[in-house]
Length: 344
Image 1 (tube, rainbow, N blue to C red):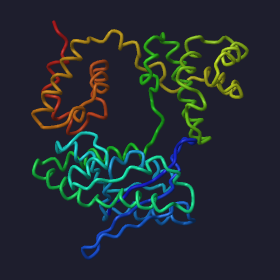
Image 2: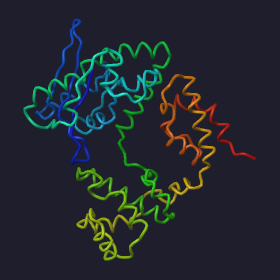
Image 3: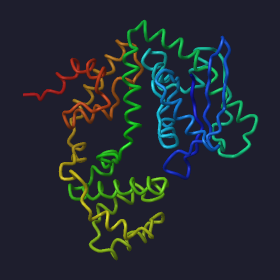
Image 4: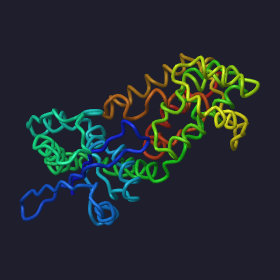
């Protein structure tokens, strides 16, 4: 079955599932169901369908949909066929949106008028219902074309492996282990300040989940790094620091102080964000050039094999990141290993 969702995530940490669209083929006819996930008992009924492994779920770029399903239904759509990923792996196009991919494969132009609509209101308007139905109307056509290409190119296993990794990540949905590494400002912090940043960012993420509020509403990245860098010596100094920041959560001063002074597991073994300053840019460029050449040989869009972020991680820490495991490592390792070896 074809599946899509509409959800709202503007004022919450968790996406609030509002509508689930399901496309079914029966006796050569396409049926589209628009399922009100706000109605009592619906999410429990959806959970059983999502978990039914005899039904292939066809979705387009479902990463956020997976989070919404996991939170609302405590179930995930297995097995999964991601049409955006399939288009990338077959060379049709990288990161293509649903409308663009539909038009590319079927020639049918789709309206984009309800992309920022309020899907929690009831009743939904006629234009909302039509837009929602269109989001699953062409998934079977996309699947049939892309599956045929995958089989011809012997890449069906690639798609299945990537889909399972996405599902596993959504299933675990754990806190980011080293959140400081994704913030550029961490590169300018000494090791002690980096440990403080890790403590604050992990606390921020936990608190956001518990209170169902956006992370930036609790403690934005800039302020978290400022506190970590300044290392206030007492709660009054922390309060003064917060008072000078327009979006500071002053009511959370006590919780922030406690988080700042509560060690987290394995923090002493955290990777040093300053390694980026010492990174050999020529070696990084060589890795990027090798990936680009290999991508061209395989007729893969840029970024599908390995992003710059993943190559930086590989170069900095000498270990293959999880995102490059499996078929990607098998394809990349013979090409990249010689470039990773230290020069004598």
